[in-house]
Amino acid sequence: KDSPDFTHVTPDGVPIQTRSVKTSVRMKNGDTLIIGGIYEMTKSKKNNQVPGLSRIPLLSWLFRHRMENLEKRELLIFVTPTVIEAGMVQGER
Image 1 (cartoon, one colour):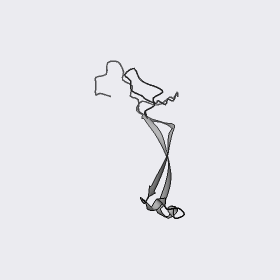
Image 2: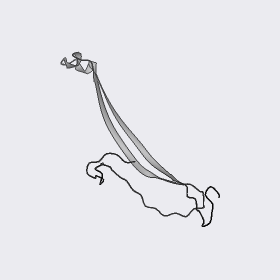
Image 3: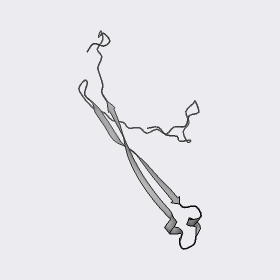
Image 4: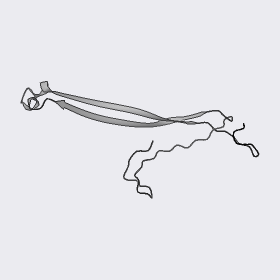
């Protein structure tokens, strides 16, 4: 997954963050390889409060709600190679 990262900018001026993996496998024609292990963690905090009442000293905690969320995502890449031999007509296997 690419996400904005202003430390790396493409020649077109688009900021991206890239992740890469290098592997070597042997597989049969048409088999599917799944590459995983690339994770993204997102932590967020949210405060909800009742306007005015949340500013009253000693009672403000009754009118506030704080929530923290930790989200973990894994990127899975599915690769299914097809060997095309010389002389094969397109659409024929």
